[in-house]
Amino acid sequence: MIKALPSDAAGVLDVLLSSSDPVQTALRDQVPHLQVTARCTCGCGTTFFDLDTAAVQPAPCGPGTVVAAEAQFQDGDCCGEVLVFAAAGYLSWLEVASWGRDNTMTTLARVQQVLRQGRARPLGS
Image (tube, rainbow, N blue to C red; front, side, top):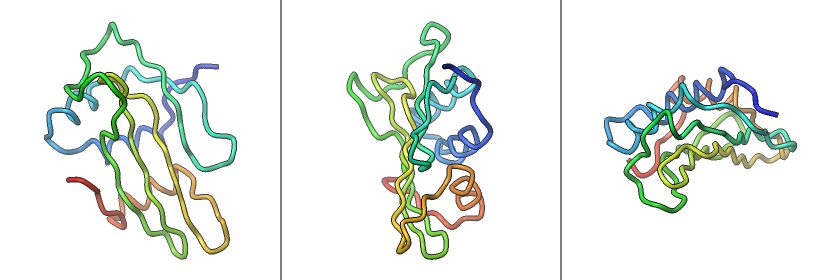
């Protein structure tokens, strides 16, 4: 089932794709054209996208699958990272991995709050 892009996914993409890097700029232009095809069933917040590739240009990141943006976060006893993947220059999925002492999953909405509060560290920037 395809659904419109929810605010938690849009918010995380907004924060992670905020640099002036040409790849991130091109990917940011794709966000209004994204739709959600699936979310991970474990509760981690990982979200898979569909994109009308005729409506946007590919980002200049090559033909394969790449991590286009990522950040590590700290939320109480839980820490982890969030990654934005692009395949052949198009946004493909947003992955959330969290590691906590009590195996608590960090939702995408919580990751968005942590990113906006500045309790995350971009990687590779």
